[in-house]
Length: 428
RNA sequence: GGAGAAGUGGCCGAGUGGCCGAAGGCGCUCCCCUGCUAAGGGAGUAUCUGGUUUAUCCCGGAUCGAGGGUUCGAAUCCCUCCUUCUCCGCCA
Image (cartoon, chains in turn orange, purple):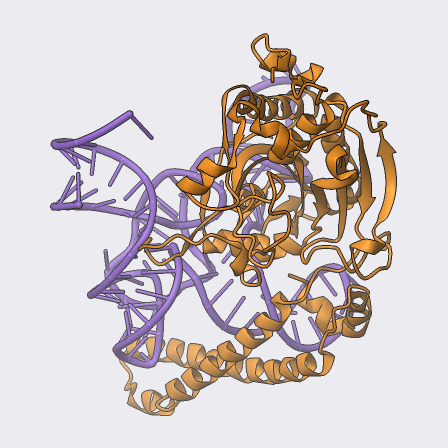
């Protein structure tokens, strides 16, 4: 959520900024609602003030034994007027909130112009795609060996876009998770957290999945008190919400968290896309990286976080490139996003394996996630960042395809050897 | 799942209809005293938000787990929900 004060004071500049995204802000509508709000709020608060002072006088009069009836008569119709005013005001506030919460984040100056993913800009590349002296197979064909990746069984158990993994493949999948978590905790200074995979709607609102992106989520049926429950689409939701409604000590900053969770996405609207294999699943594992930092540190933090994700690929010796998303392709809550794309030999292309974003104070404002600035002794909003470090299923795809051998067996990357119990290759 | 108790500021804890955004204590910040340490004295110390300035100051509003209700007036009374604790049951 943007700062409503910014919208009040400098809406034209905001509108101009947002037009880079292709987002059209209805300035006139906002301003007319704001004008109404201002007058209505002032008159309502005046009425509240009147009621409060009258009530105090009644209290005093009663204490000193005076007749309070004249005072009561005075405020007789105040209650109704006040109630009506408060109702109108809260309706108006709700309409303004709806508009404001539908406005995407301001973009970083360094974000390139552009409309779609075509306009994203590659900023660096690492590694050389291996050349094969045999015809490469994709991970689905390779995964069919020994039933390593069993999509048919998953379809029977559940439906499309799920997978069953067996034996050495299941182990390598698990090894990847351990390897990523260990690297981030021991080499990059992250604290590991374990979090719920089911969250309430407040948490999803805090990170911005709700109200706009409900169709991407799996919602649980049943009665759970007065809140709706959802499966998490990413660890970003539970981990970022750790600081919701908190005022953290400045000396605890920056905070760096990593968490492994399954992620559940309904993938509504992506029918027909990536239907083959492991690329786009309803359930997948991800190791997530999160930073909570002071405002002045967030630009640097994004660079560091992105590097932490890249290093995983370098250790696994998987070629990748890093791109910065253009204005039109940058996500709703993000100020700036880097995507890391790994080389996928069978498709002869780079595929997204991590997305690292600086949300600035956009999520923090919604969540009231703050810290106390020791210099001013005032509370300020944190800046939040997150990125995948990495998506485990897609990393597995990259390993299977990049490390394939002529006979269909798969070499184990050196970095994973300590986690594979002596296994050096997945034998066909 | 059953029975009971409780949810108040950074923490502990008082407050059962008005003078309560809230006693007292701890913690923290600043000042004074002090050879060092320890102790002592004084002042300050919740959040969100409107108006005005837009750095303060000032004048308002809201918030005592959440949401409703009663009342001129609710931390306090009523209802619903959530959470925590104790006991019993069940259980990985």
